[in-house]
Length: 430
Length: 196
Image 1 (cartoon, rainbow over the protein chains, first blue to last red):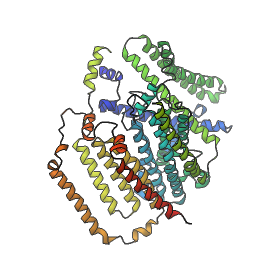
Image 2: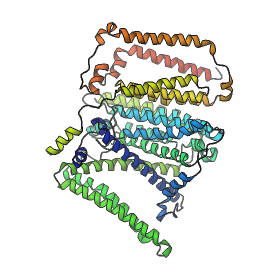
Image 3: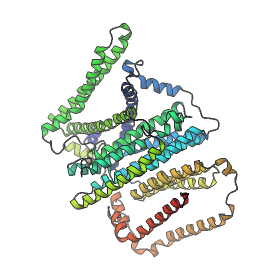
Image 4: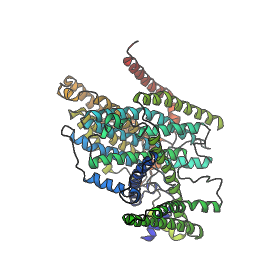
């Protein structure tokens, strides 16, 4: 058994390519657990960050600095009464959140966390991602209709119109990035997510800096369109609470409502990873070609451990600054335990990094390498997730006609122009 | 890599791909597609019909995958399941469903539909039975160990040739198809324009 596990840790292909269903299942479980934890963490960070943007404290009561608030929320949602309106279409009402959730989670099969750290590598990877994530719109539309109520229906119609409009600009931006992958000796590009990152590695540049400013423009169009696709502020017309109560999920409560939230956050992570894969070099660390001396490799492999050490330090400072009143004793102990947990994870990661350098066993080296890949990918995605919160706190909501005008009259022509210009520049250069 | 590791790798990871085209998946997907199709024409509620149609389209996409044509499968999902069906639902929601479900259906055209379906079925059966005699140059034999890449190459030619075909050998057909779409778009624009 250990031999079997070790053999897989040293593998250089994804479980899908190897045809190994057992490891594919394990990867799926790891990703499912990881995304769920990320959604819970995102929930806390969003509430906290929004509160600090507005000079409030945010959740402070449940656990130290509200750290246990997501767990309390989850318990509340699970225990809440699950209401299906009498006039609603029972079956469709029941199936709608599941459609959204399945579409949001299915795309994770092709997200490349590393050259072999993905469930599978399809040669149509990016098409699969765009196609399946567009199925998420169906869940929203159907939910709004099945509720048999006015606000949800309006929310669903808005969301459909918005998604259909922004998908066009988004697709054209993606095509211009895919075009850039074909600038090699064979002249054939690739749609595979792993292939796209490898193409960036071969060409020695992230596609955001390629053909400046064309790559940057395409990236910006995608970054705007992906906010509209996931129905987030400032484009959250589908759930504009000042106009539509809660939009398409007004009639939903309890667990079903939380499934919608889970799907929304999972979809946000998924589109962010498309952006990271296509334009920001995916799993690659900064300057993989320029700084490739062994010492640099080692320095960069320390980053995951150092990050956790930083988090542990923040938690430690929080513990020290906790008021010394006896009311805060349990909170203080809790935060101290949390800090030491983070510190031990940091130590473990640092240990792996050192072992990967000094030991000559290829397993430790490959394991440390794998952690590095996943770390850089997750870090880039995390920056996008923070940007989502930042946008929400910064910009007021668009009016619907403004939204449509931006989509069709600004983003679409620009993305078409960028696509044509990319093709022309590519032909001239090669 | 050390030798122990290498031998373990070779035993746990097989070099080709595990076959996806098992009879179980074929019958599952084909059954889902047919069941969805039947539901589309028997449901009175048009949203239910649309949902059943989405199920059919997705199972057909799965069948394309089993034929080693992943690009067609992806196009099917993006264009039909993701794009057209969302617009379908969009339009259906603006229609008063309670009134529509009480109205009489277009019953007079069903003989035409049945005969067209029977004709298509006969064509398929004919191609299935006589196919070997009709297209002798299309015969192919698969070895036991063939992996997906080989099969896909045999069925559709080399990778990356799709773009060359559609912009080289078959440009005219391709452009004719896009002309059709252009006509439809122009028609839609003219119909929605209030003042000419």
